[in-house]
Every structure is written in C-alpha cells, then in structure tokens.
Image (cartoon, rainbow, N blue to C red; front, top):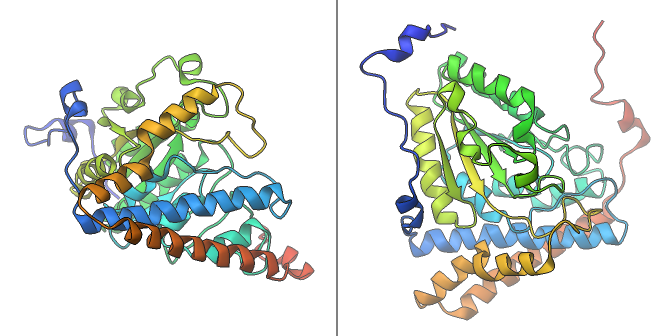
Length: 351
C-alpha cells in the first residue's frame, strides 16, 4: 500500500476537517429523529438496559463469574453510532462491551450464555464477559487489556485501506484508556496513512474510579489528536440524536478517504466500574440528578409521548424486550456447560 508523503497532505485541494463544535453549536438542538427512528432507538436502548439489569442480577446470584462491567446509562452512544453504519463496517471495544454486541445485532441468548460460561455462548463458554466476538456481525471484541482495542481497531482500518474498500472501523475506548501510550502510537499511524477509523472515546467521567479532573491534564478528549492533525468533536453522549448526527459526519469523513477522526462522547455510567465496585468516589445525589435530567432512554420516551405515541405502545415495546431478556437468562442458566475437551480447542502454537 502506498503511504502518503508529508507533502501529499498539504496540497491546495486538501479537504477541510469537520469544524470543532462551538458553544453555540452545543446549545443547539440536534437534528430531529423521525418517529420510526425514535422507536427503533428506544427498542435497542431498552434491550441493552434490561439485558444489563438482568446480567447484574445473575452476577449477584453467582450465575456469572469473573468481571462484569455494565453499560447502564451509556446506551445512546453505541445505538447512535450504529445507526450511521452500513454492512461491512467494523466495531471493536474494551471490556464494557455487552451493549455494543446487542447494538450490532448479536443474539441476546448467545451473549448471556457466554456470561454464564455455557456451551452455546459466543466463545463457547470460554471467554466470558470481556472476550466475545462475531465475525458475522463484524464485532471484533470485547478486550480486557485497557487500550489494546485501539491498536487492534487501527489494524482493522489498515486492512480496509489496503483492500481498497470503503469500510469504516469504530474503535471504542474510555477516558481512562485515553492516557495510554499505545493510543497515541495508533493515532500517529492512522493519520500518516489516512486510515478510515473513528476513535470513539466514551467519557463516563470516572474511568475505573478516578475523576477525569484528577487523572487527565487535558480533559477535552476530542483534542487528544491535535498534535497528529486528527480532527475531533465533543458530543452529548446522552442524546442519541446528537450521537447519530456526529457519527454521520465522521463516517462520511472517513469514507471519503480523509483519515481518522475522534468523537468524545460525554456520557455517564450509573453503576460502578464493575459489579465489584461500590462507587464511593461519587455521591448518590450526583447519579440521581443525571438519571433524572439526562437519561438517554427517558429522553426518547418523552419525545415519543409528545408526538402522541400512545403510552401503551411504549409499554408494549418494553414488555417485548423484557421477554427477550427473560428468555436469554433462562437459556443461559440451563444451557449445558462446555465439555472438558473444549479446553484444547482454539489454542495455537507457533512452531
């Protein structure tokens, strides 16, 4: 693959990067959704939330072992981003990954069965919460090493550039991973070779338990690519419409061959970092205020009610989602455990 020289990127016809969002822009309402878009967003966000609530219950009952990081509160990010993609685009993320799997269309039964370590889980019961994959859905994990998925996502984008297709890679990470060195090595490579990758920073404010204000000298994560000439934008990650609008621009930027971009999703997780985290580093009042004022699902629900969508219709959607999750939980607790021989599959040795 030809690599662009430095002089190649400074010609007069170089495209102008997406404008950084101003205060006036951030105060402006995002483009409206149609009724069908709102209904579709509501359904998948409810599926993610109900799934995660049930996963939390199963963890408390001992049916799920190991680590379990819930996505409750952050649903609008992955749903809005997914709405901007097309078949062939790829997704890779870290360990808070159940929501991404469901948004990609992976089966709730298979995801839950992997959480409980069962035979019909996506990794045949051997991967657990942080190590699930679906080549069919172009979901490349689920990775437990902080920041590793950024490098891997950059590699996926390199493959797309090498093959000459127009696919885009979404590489999700959190505010904690944003301070890791491999992230900046990836930024440098991606901009040098104009790779079609969107780095989505899910800034939920606390990483593993330390506030951004205490851990990051530069708290505007959309600017983390400035020294590499990578454009970025801060987005209201609690509003699925704002996420979709930003994603549309970023995807177009990448498909047109302009290289990488960064989207900082300003979001919030309602639960602790993992199920074992009591989250004593923040107040209950803070969490409740976010839930009351900015909950991503309630925002959509209120918009639909204002459009005269019957409340019974919305309750029916929730009931259908709860049924899917209940069936997934039942399947995941009754599916057989893997055979002992499964320990010797998918193991590779370099001669």
